[in-house]
Image (cartoon, rainbow, N blue to C red; front, side, top):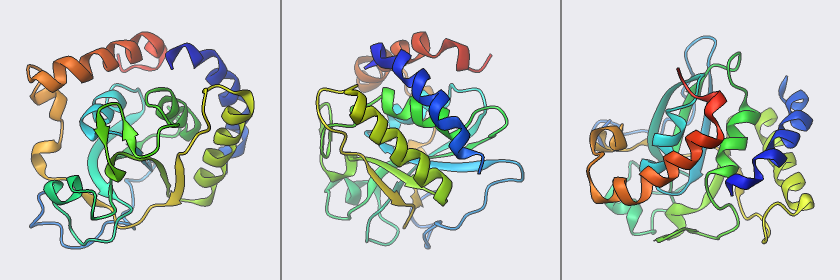
Length: 215
């Protein structure tokens, strides 16, 4: 997927003008309407295991914070264990707080689409289930428009062998994940999953997007 990076640069140029426009027992209500700090914006993505995706997006210049969580389901205040059953309807997601003057939403989408497989339904590698579905949870109509246009252009250009199945839906029923999921990779680098799965993903990402990384 990383060999597609040149095409993403073209898509970014095309789309950029269209976007001018805690723990379970603590979080009892969905944080759908949370407002970011002044000058910042929010983005919410589901692209597989949030341990991996958090580690990737934390590296980007302009991304102020990354929070793992759950979105798009029906169960109130779900636990990680409940989400893993696939019965709550939630996807594992990351919620980003970012500075649009430093990194645009279109650039975040570029990273989103190039660091997971958006053509596999309810699956990322060995992680299988609706909780691992590819999803863009938009926070406003501008985000929705840009995500839908990018998907259309990627499909039209045949960037992937198969059709993109990424859901584009308004953010809903978002809950932060338990505290032990936060900053998981940085706190558990020697764990087998981190070494076998996250390390290779990070290495490829950092080589491809070295000009976008935090100094």
